[in-house]
Image 1 (cartoon, one colour):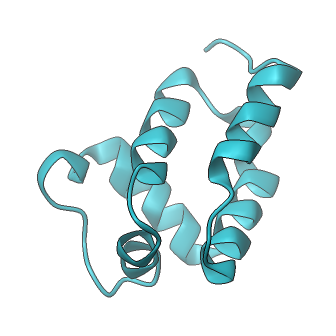
Image 2: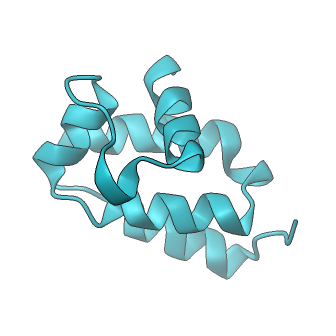
Amino acid sequence: MNELTDLDRTRLRWRARRGLLENDLIITKYLDAYESSLTNEDVAALTELFELGDNDLLDLLLARKEPEGDLDTPKLREIIHKMREL
């Protein structure tokens, strides 16, 4: 596991900023809880999530939808599950 540098953390937090406040709140809680233990695989998975539109992301985070297609991976399911529990 490679540790994230301060620059990596700043970039991840910047990338996590969303147009919908609900998404911001959920993602910020997740990063506050898990940021210090994120792996490169986690960051790559989060980056995939951050590529989604705000409404699609919110639907996943609120369990209105489940990951499908390229997003249906064990790592993304794990991250989404953790975000839903916070």
